[in-house]
Length: 415
Ligand SMILES: Nc1ncnc2c1ncn2[C@@H]1O[C@H](COP(=O)(O)OP(=O)(O)OP(=O)(O)O)[C@@H](O)[C@H]1O
Ligand SMILES: [Mg+2]
Image (cartoon, rainbow, N blue to C red; front, top):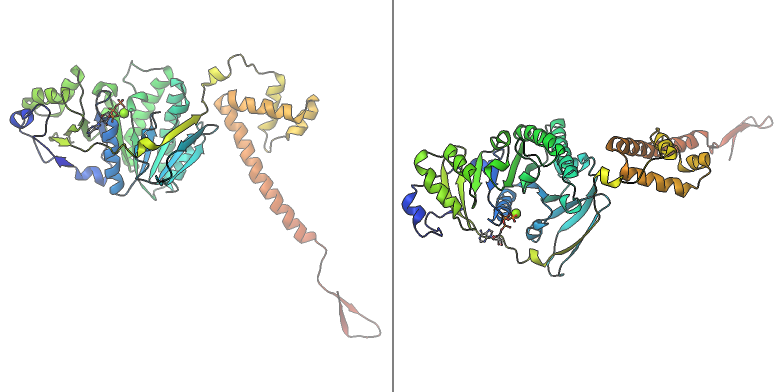
């Protein structure tokens, strides 16, 4: 980053008034395990700065796990970095772009009820440099969104805990962290209340599990204090409000507070005020993200994830549904045709009911059904190998038969 103490919209204001305490120490940021929070109002350039930093992290050998906030802005990075895009099961994403734009990307689907597998792929280095999780594009329910991110954080911490060996240096990037955590008393939904608590707990653990965290939010007070206190670097874009004033007062020596408050209130999009963990601060200028190429990528997203309440509206379970759940959650699950025989219904009718159940049943039930199915697959595979083994054991012996003829006491070989 080029330090620019004079390149400020208000002429020489900064240069004259602020004795910039420098150098701010950025090396630990690239070494990892120092978390960074970008704060700024809408349109202040948070996402652009986030992407600028992501590029720096990639240059420093990191794999990025990025949460898309629904705008699919990661397209601006796609022309430059191999990308894996994760979209929820049952949803689709079609990208269209001119052929001269040679993109290295892949789209994979993930189980949004249990994103453990997604996290495992990332930690094992089986995804591309820029790995993006898209969820919000397909989901209008704030509650479901909160639940999903709680699971994603949980899976990340749990999977990190399970292995001390790591194939990748991981940066977890969350644009608009304020969608996911809210301060006490301001939770968007009851579910968000639980999530905020859990995420705060998980963020504390990230450092311990060698995951670096980068996030954006609108104002300091958007983020609960126990989460905010986990960050080592703060990058302030244009932002205002008493909480900003208090925040700056808390972070830097008193004599700079007024000037810096004015600076962030009037800051142009290409600048940022960096305050590091030691309370040093500096103004930086950074280039705008190259949007031109990314703008050529057009998309078509299909599919919607509804909350369970919405899905099951007007759809009641009947006795047959309950028995289907019972039979299909057995290990191994009862075959569809057998359940159909029991009720004198067609196999297709039972499969249709089963698929509806997968959409509307509570999470635990769906997981039990999926578990049984997964078990059935391995069980079938085992059964096949067992059958093959048996076939070998009981196959007609093809070996030659030895006979001893009374007339010829020599042993003869017949086939
Ligand atoms: N360094 C920069 N130099 C010049 N223009 C910039 C720079 N960074 C961002 N911009 C411009 O500012 C606008 C807003 O940028 P961006 O989308 O990053 O803001 P944001 O804070 O993430 O907004 P939102 O809250 O809507 O997500 C864009 O048009 C972008 O081109
Ligand atoms: Mg943004």
